[in-house]
Structure formats: structure tokens, C-alpha cells
Amino acid sequence: MSLLATSLRRIPRPSGAARMARRCLGDSVTGPGSTDFAGNLPHLRNFFMKPAVSYGEFKQQCIAVRLFAFVGTCSFCVLSLIMSPPKSSYWIRYSPSYAFAYIRDGIVGSSPPLFLTEKIERDTDVPEIAKELIATRRLLSGGSDSEEEH
Image 1 (cartoon, rainbow, N blue to C red):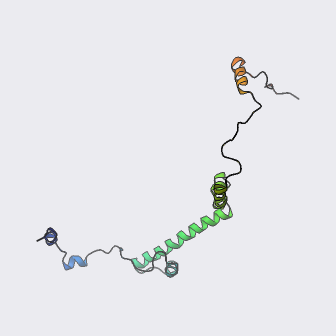
Image 2 (cartoon, rainbow, N blue to C red):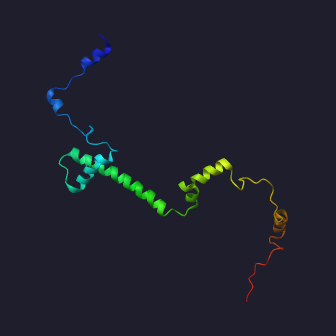
Image 3 (cartoon, rainbow, N blue to C red):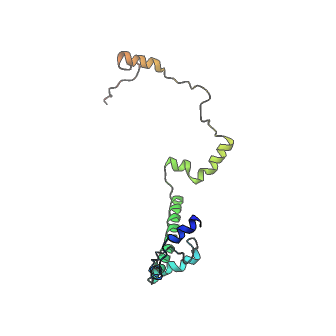
């Protein structure tokens, strides 16, 4: 005799009364699927129009309400963003409307390059200003700090 057969013989089987007293906790699937809008619409109407008679009916009504509440909430958020988009620079840069320009710039290339191609010449002599600040603790060549009275 195999070990599996031996182990199955030693497991006590529930009697008829124990099988009858088994709790059904709602694991079975009844009613339309959770993505069937047309099938869940009558259950949604019944949720608001008539009370549920059993737990199974109430559970199906809650599934229908959950489906339509999720779709409604997502639709409201998307329409709100379309009608009144945020003024943040992140939204402007990463919004869905910028996707075409992002793809185009990735293929063609951006007009100003990301990195500098040549050295930029400035009018300010930074080493001379630093030396002057260290020596005198003020800028002698700069304007005065005092305000003019009129």
C-alpha cells in the first residue's frame, strides 16, 4: 500500500451532520462578472430602489455599486484634469499632451542642446572680485550700500 493511500485512510471524514453544518462564507461566484456593465446595471438600480432579501443579493449589489463607483471616480478625475489642469511645471512637462513632443524630440533631437558645446564668456572677473572681497571685506569697484535720500 502506498503512503498516500495510507494517509488518506487515517484522515477522519466528516459525518452527514458535520457536512450540513458547514458554513458557506460567500466564496462561490454568482451573478454577472465584475466587469459586466450591462449585467450589473439592474443590481445597481436594485441597491437604491429595493432592499436586499439575502446576503448573496446584498453582496451582488455591493459589487455592482463598487464597479460603477470606481468607473465614476476615475472618469471624474480624468475629466477634472482635462478641464482644469494643474499649473505645475511637472504637469506641463509630463502631461499626456506633451507625449507627442517628447517622442518627436527623442527622434529628431531637441533644438537647444542639453549640454554646452563651447565655453561661455562672462563680463565678470570672478578671481579679481574674490581677491578684493578677501582683502578688504567689501567691493570697492561696486556701487554703494547706502540709500540715497530724496
